[in-house]
Length: 281
Image 1 (tube, rainbow, N blue to C red):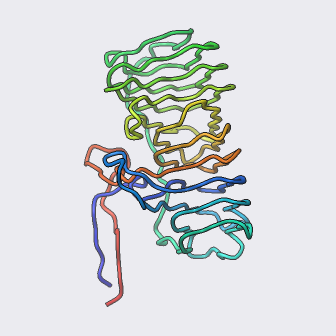
Image 2 (tube, helix red, strand yellow; image 1 turned 180 degrees about the vertical axis):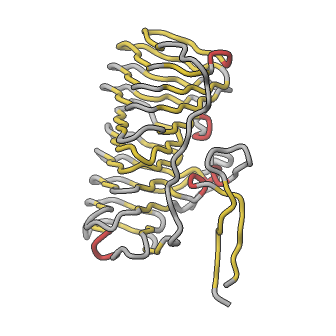
């Protein structure tokens, strides 16, 4: 066997969505790719995949388009794992994952004492505010503005009430670790003004988590939360990579993998040397 080894991470594997359990595409959803480093580049495929062998672990409804391949585990049966409606358009093939593929846990930064709660209506955090917090709660019509490069570790829940948002300003970035749940009420969610998914990294570090988003704006983010159930409402277009326990796209939600995420460095979370290609000789 001839193997190629390179520095990579689960986020750099071309997966628009990867789930430990299930992926549920509602009517009219689309999976495709784009390149935040070169927005003019077109025809970028994106993959989806699951570690589950359950019947219908990947459920694809009417008028769903997948511009890319589907990956399942070696002991999975493609005819049962992938349940695609006859009107679905899958522009790719079904492949088996390497037997060693996994979703490793991620650890939060080793901050010391908590700085308390982030709560209120209009709040701005700067780079110097990086640290450990107990929870985030943003009031109706409120905004938590990220101005600078921040890393936050939230040990509890993140709640965004009606029309509230966490906004990453231009020339800023947010790395968010959270142990609890993310609950976004009507027309609330994350607003990454940079439109670069790598500038909003959301890492789930707890068990049996939930991410419930009702964005009114497009979502540009990377979410790696291997024990979280994620639901996206409101026909939102999502850009980046979403690796969770299970994911449901409601109301014609579209997902675009960002090709720029393939570029990794030794400082990235979950980065490691792994086999990227192999063939028998």
